[in-house]
Length: 298
Image 1 (tube, helix red, strand yellow):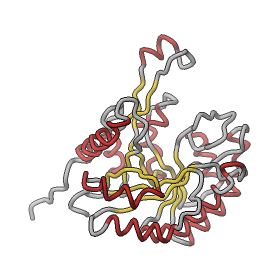
Image 2 (tube, one colour; image 1 turned 30 degrees about the vertical axis):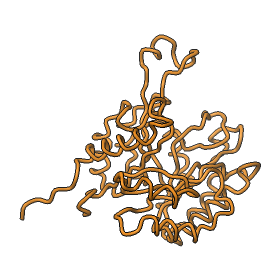
Image 3 (tube, rainbow, N blue to C red; image 1 turned 120 degrees about the horizontal axis):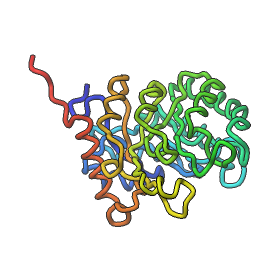
Image 4 (cartoon, one colour; image 1 turned 180 degrees about the horizontal axis):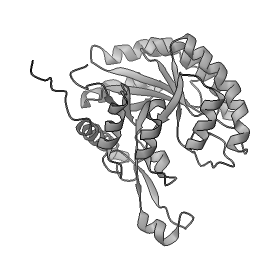
């Protein structure tokens, strides 16, 4: 057990192409892990060279790369998502160079069709990706964001509802596929995240540090289809979730992964206050973790 983080690290997300530049500027704040992310494609980025530069940026510090992520639609292969599936493959193949064993992102979906109609294509694509990943000792995790989609229609992701998770894991019953979970994306659908985490924790491979604030007075007054917003994405420490409960459930299940803060969403701690909010979240999550590990007397 590491003396600093006692089994669960707290870190943050950074853009994969910017990681070597950004990590040296922010690692001194105390981040213990970094989740490198790409939007729709890794592009022409040389991942082997990037891995070397990231290792140099980390140096001798006790920091890990927790996951490599690509957020796009790998099921369609059209438009801006034409390279998303190939990017999943590249990240799986190169994960070991970053010292990571986890690749994550959206499942994708068949545009404009229901989750049920998308499941066969999901099984085809991720059945093969799961086998490719297993051969390389890599796990796959699915972000639980709806990206504006519903059960009936959408164009990004099917993994935003527990009923969809049941269908997904039945369609691809592989031990190396699971969830990249956060409370925020469930709260925007008015799902209570705590009992959900308790039920699904064995399938949680990665946790994003993002919370939400729900204005229940506005929900009671206008419902969820009124003219105003009723829920906001928040940086941990500013939202409604008790992260001590989250970490307790994770610990009880033997979770040994990371909680990586997903910034750039908070309506208040944004712009020039972005890193202020993220570092507040870092310290808050470490307190919820119990603070620094203290060994028992012998």
